[in-house]
Length: 405
Image (cartoon, rainbow, N blue to C red; front, side, top):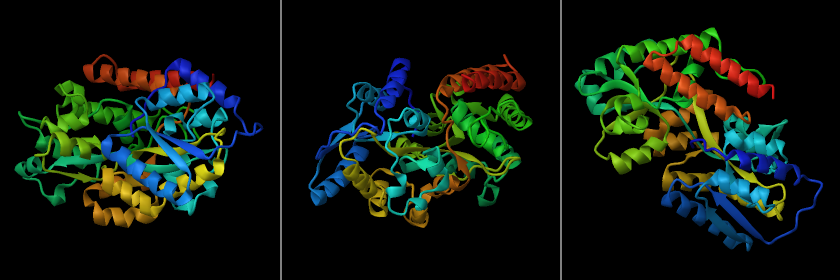
């Protein structure tokens, strides 16, 4: 679910390759398909291979599943060489680039009950009014709580925070000499989730204008920084851990802000932690969270669009999405499966609920560098080297420069 970066040269190559693979050229027909995935591990790879095999046996079409070592890099090489996989995982951070370059076949409206996919996910993969590729699964940020630390602090179910003020209160009570109340990865992803709850964001609704330097975002950064300076919130690196999951799993923090990928880390690396997940508390702007997802992209120059669409239709069917959820914890992208998730995976219910008020990552090509600089600004802010206002002003300038290119 986490964004990955293409090498700059490959980014250019993908766009150039996409521009040369438009729909005017008739792709060479083939009776074999290739599927490239960015797998989270053996369980996901095996589940995809099993699902593909079920379709292959019924259709009679052979399919090769390729688990990529570096998905964005290998996709870039495939498009640059004119030989991309027929079907592939694609994240929202690269979607627009591929769609604008003509590299994608827009097939969304050919999928059975395509309106059943959560609107926030469909929006992430819609370009120029067309749903280009359908989301395969998703994750949102939620608040993860160490139950033992919670109870040791005398907190109960009634204390679950639903507002920022309550979050500050419980973080204060959870902080002691052994651990901090709340720690999370100190980058634009969890900070962006707080910005959404604060009523702000990096861009406007249609991603055409930068909205970084606003009173709403300023209030959000001031809220976070005030609690960080008070010693009840922290960025994970400030307490000698690499990310929010590690801060939580090692017991350095009683709470963290993470997505469902933390479940695998906790089960594998920190199995003795007693944890639960609740929805993010509402800020001045209401409830907000960031949604992370991938879609099933189909190459514009695939040799068999009809078979590729049929395979994707199979992979995103309710039955196969349920199988994926059971195999490796993927949250189904179909809203009709939300009650099933709540019943079968109650520990994931908060992640699933968040998608109804979530927003996807910034889809603007080149904005990665802007957000990377924002991360640096956040580090300076918590270290006392920059004010929240200065950090947002720099973010605004950098973002406008990218949007006007």
